[in-house]
Image (cartoon, rainbow, N blue to C red):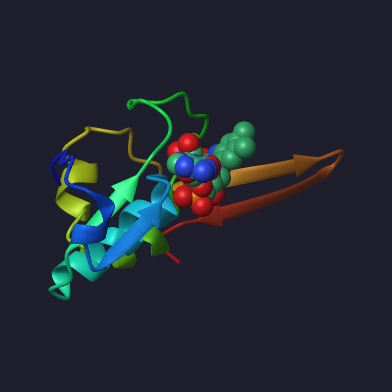
Length: 96
Ligand SMILES: Cc1cc2nc3c(=O)[nH]c(=O)nc-3n(C[C@H](O)[C@H](O)[C@H](O)COP(=O)(O)OP(=O)(O)OC[C@H]3O[C@@H](n4cnc5c(N)ncnc54)[C@H](O)[C@@H]3O)c2cc1C
């Protein structure tokens, strides 16, 4: 996607916010042939907190044509997670 400053009325769809939801929505609409503008109030790269992306997210990112871009960022690959509360311990293997 590129930055384009045409007037808003020249697009089929205006998406407010370029977070994960807005970006994915815009990419899906664009791949369906619509002319889409995203309006974002923050300058990117913006401040963000987060350490992981669940494997199920890959499906929608692939469908939106964004998976290669995300993977090209070279993020650390996680294969699971462990949640601990007192003596309780719950392990998740993302392959499952
Ligand atoms: C501390 C923390 C840790 C997290 N860790 C993870 C994690 O590890 N993995 C994970 O998958 N999720 C994580 N999340 C959740 C994840 O951040 C959200 O689920 C995700 O950001 C939601 O995406 P979104 O596009 O709906 O909203 P946002 O990411 O909030 O994006 C909304 C965008 O809209 C813009 N906007 C808002 N109003 C306007 C306006 N009027 N005009 C123009 N632009 C506007 C904002 O500037 C923003 O960029 C975490 C959340 C928090 C708070």
